[in-house]
Structures are given as structure tokens and as C-alpha cells.
Image 1 (cartoon, rainbow, N blue to C red):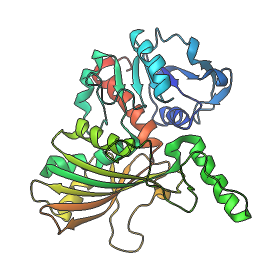
Image 2 (cartoon, one colour; image 1 turned 45 degrees about the horizontal axis):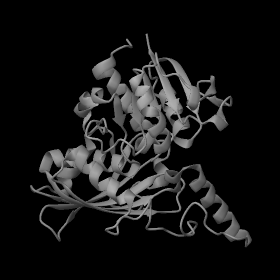
Image 3 (cartoon, rainbow, N blue to C red; image 1 turned 120 degrees about the vertical axis):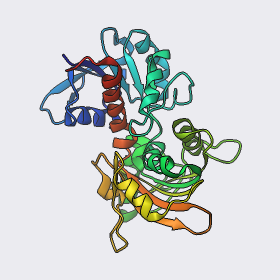
Length: 342
């Protein structure tokens, strides 16, 4: 007997990817409900590549009672309006928005990193999925932290436009086309031109000069890995459709060499080490699209600090950064707590 699963925001980029991954990973479901905003009600979407189709239900009227878990991928406003309603009906919520991430009663989970933290989900019957840039970073950091204890992390991100949803992808495409044909390319979704440009600004600015995206990386990393770790982040939007990249500098309490780090990363769950010191011996965003792994390259020692390393980390942000991590949380929840499926 399998699970009854709801996907909220099923018509969006992440929602569709969740449906794809549920099928790809043969998640043990008996029934799936696709749920979205009223404007999508009644539309038909594919259930991955299963050959089956789903009719979209209206979130405003959907009854969560009798459903085992709901994977929310529709943003904070939808989660604010409906996640607690679903949880109260006995349907465990796995929320991809930022709404509950820093709630002390809601576990923030990356299954390869802190699976035991899921045990606290019953406080609100809600589990939070971290920010896309945080998720891939902590996957890479966790095994190194276990080996040598991380003191400080400085990260610069190179985040694809898909992190801003379909509107961001459309703007990159339209601006690129318009530049070639000589049409207007005024920004709408982003604050400046994104085509053939980079923008050091994601989400709103805070009083200290950082952005909310940068704040998320700091506080989420601390919640997942440990409060003593110091984190400094600069988050940049780049003209890439899918795939986030990160240049990460790490300072450790204990000595660790590049060779040791490579050996550790090579054996760690969720990580693919591709680190040849030659032309093309590293992974770029184009190569990570559609993949489950978090790819690590350019592992090297930093001689400017004691016990320092620098690494390059790339992942499909729609997958590990969002949809895949949500499905992995659902799998973990089933194994550790629900145990309904054979």
C-alpha cells in the first residue's frame, strides 16, 4: 500500500519537476493530486513521463484530509494560506518556500546532511526545504565539516534565472533575442539587464547592506550544520537558464589537505567529484542539468589562512535545490516515520 501525495504548485517549474522526480525515483504512491491556483484549475498536466495525466485541482477548495503528505512548491503566500490547514488535517507538509525555514518548531532538512532532524516534524506536522543555494552548499560542506570542523565559510554564488521562476527564464530569453535583433530589452523581472550581464542582487536589501538571499544562506547553513559556523555570502544572478554555481572558501579548525578533501568528497552521499587539473576537468551548469548529484570541482588549498580550502560546487537548482530535495525528504519521512509502503 502506497502513499496519497499532493503536489501544490504543480503547474510551476518546481512543481512539474517534483512530478517528474516522483516518477523517476519510483516513489511508492497510490494516488497523486495536482493542486494549483484557481487560474490553473481544470487544466491537464503530465505525471512525469509515466504516460498518465492529472487534472489540476483548485487550492482554495482542496480538502487535505486523508492525504499522507503535501509537497508545497507555490511560494510563501500560498504556504501561509494553506500549509497549516493541510498539516492540521493530518497531511504532513514538505514546504519549499522560505516561510517556515527558521521556525524553531519546523525541521530544515537536507537528507544527506541532517536526516535525524526530521524527527521533530510532529511539532507542527511541517518540514521545510532549504533555499536552493543553501542546499547544494551544505551537501558539499557536511562531510568536510565532519572531518575537520568548519569555522568559517565565504561563498559567492552564480545563480541561474530559473531560480526566479518562469518569468526569469522568459526574460533572459527575450532580452537575448531582442539584443540580437535590435529591439528594446528593458528589465521587468530583474532590476537590471540580465542577458550578457550579471546582477549582484537577489531578493530585497536588508539594513546591513546584504540581501535576503544572502541572509538565507547564512542562517539556514547555521541551522542545518551548526550555529558556530561563520558564513559570508554574496549572491549573484547570472545569464544561465538552469544550474547554480558556487565558489566556496572554507576555513577549518583542524588541518585538512586538498587530497584528503578529495578522498572524502569522492565517497560522500549525493556528491560527484569531478576534479581534474586540466582543460575541462571540472563541471559547469550546462552539464549538471537533469542530474541528481551535487558536483564538486577545483578542490585546492588556500595558503592565505590556516587550514583553508577552496572548492567549486554546481547543481541543478530545480532538482537538488528544490524538487529533488523535497522528494528525498518525502522518502526519508516514509522510512523513518510513516512506513506505510512496503
